[in-house]
Each structure stands twice: as structure tokens, then as C-alpha cells.
Length: 133
Image 1: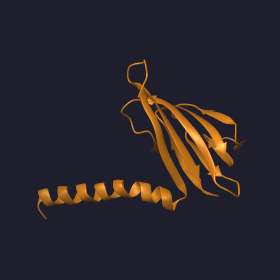
Image 2 (image 1 turned 180 degrees about the horizontal axis):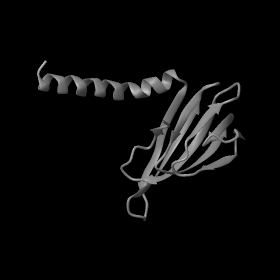
Image 3 (image 1 turned 90 degrees about the vertical axis):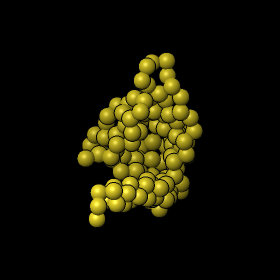
Image 4 (image 1 turned 45 degrees about the vertical axis):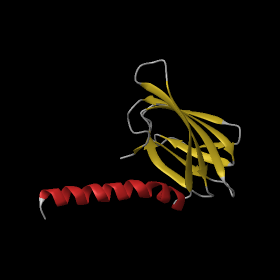
């Protein structure tokens, strides 16, 4: 296979994987709805707000962000774990600050859907979600 065909095949595979990400989120019980993205008055920084819905028992595996996150539970019960620390359980109306670069996970530990409003203050142009090693 010549170099052009290999590059084309790799690009198509990468595109297919990117297109499947929303479907995979659906299959794993996570649904992300982006609500707001806006530049801040600080060069190179932006804020992003996202609603994340978790089916019962669903885990958002360990990951980090290139900035701070404030997670506010809208409904249900979510259990967070930050940098391997003790689990933190939050119910509707409670919030949690997650430091920049901290590896963390979240799990719906209730019997019904749980939702959070995630507000990120992050470095602009970097991937929002970085899987933990």
C-alpha cells in the first residue's frame, strides 16, 4: 500500500472514531450537552458549561481538564473521587470544586438518572477532557 493510501486509511479511521464518540457516550450511559463556550477577559482562557446526564450506575472514568471545574449536581446522587482520595457523595443542590489537572471520576450511585452542570475555566485550544493514564 503506498503512502497516500495509508494516510487516507488512517484519516478515515480517525474520523470514524471521532464520529462514534457521541454514540459511545450514549452506550455507556453518559450524555453531554454543551451549553456555553465563551472567551474570558484573561488571554488564552475560556469558560465552558456542559450538562452531563448519567444513567443509573454509570461511571465517567478518571480524567482531568486543562483548568478548574465546578460540578453542581442538578438531580440524583453522584459520587466523585479526586486524585485517588476518599469518595465524595453529592446530592442535588450540592457543588464541588475540582482543581486544574486533578484526575477525577464521577459515578451515579442512585437508582435514577443523575445530572450535573459542569463549569470549566480552562486553557483555550486544549482538549477539554484528558483520559487519566
